[in-house]
Image (cartoon, rainbow, N blue to C red; front, side):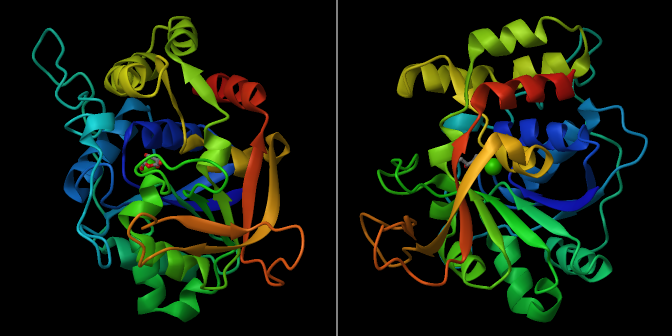
Length: 320
Ligand code: RIB
Ligand code: CA
C-alpha cells in the first residue's frame, strides 16, 4: 500500500483522478491539498468537497487549502475549459426538491495551511510519502522553501505537467500546470527528490471520447456515473469546438495509474528544466533527450508511452 498526498486544482480531470485514487486499494490517500490553477483556490477547495461528496466515504483524507497565487506570476485560470466553477458547472445543479444534486462532503478542514499539512505528512511518513501533483507546483515549492529537510524525506513526487515532444496546451510551448507557475516547477524539479512526470506526451495518448464515456456511465445508475457525465459536458464541448473531437484527455488520472498500474506506462530518465524567463517559451519544459552528450545527471523520469486502452478499461472498472 502506497501512502499518497494529492495536490490538486479541481478541475474536471482532477475530479477523475481523485475519484480513481479514492477507489484504488493500492493507495492510502492521507491528505488532499488544493492549489490555484484551473480555478481560484477557494473554488478549488469547494470543488474538492463536492468531489468527495460523490463517494460514499465513511472516512476522509485530511483536507487543507493551499496557495491562492503562483510564486511570481499573476494567476491564469481555465474557466473556458473547466467551466465557471471549475467543475463543469456541476456545483450548482439541483434536484427536483431544490437541494444541491452534488452536495459537498461534510468534512472539517484541517486547521493547518496547505503547506503546513504537506510538511506534517512528510514528517509523519518519512521515506514513505508520495506526493501526486495535479495542478501548479506552488504548494510544493513553498513547502520546500519552508522546511527542505522534511521535504527531502519524500519517497517521490509524481507530476502531471509539462510537454516535451508535444505542443503545449496553453501556448505552443507550455502545458498549463507548468505555465501557471514555472518558478515553482523549476525549483521542485531541481530539489533532488525523485520526480516522475506525466507530460502531455503521455496524457494525449489517452483519448476519452464522449461516446466511450457515456457508454460506460450509462451501464450504471449511480451518483459517480451521473457525476462523470454531468461534470464533463462543458469541457467536452470545448474539445469539440477547439481540439477537434467530442471528448477530453483525463490528464490527471495518469499519475494515479503510474502508481497503481506501472505496467501500463513506459518512462525514460532525463534532465528536465523549466523556462522561467522566456517570452514565446515561458513555462516550457525542456528535457535533454539527445542521443549523444546527454546531461549526465537526470533529475526526472518522463513518461513517454501509455497502454491507453488498458488504462481506460482499468479506470472504468475501478469507478463502477
Ligand atoms: O494541462 C493539463 C493540466 O492542467 C491538468 O492538470 C488540468 O487539470 C489542468 O490543471
Ligand atoms: Ca489539474
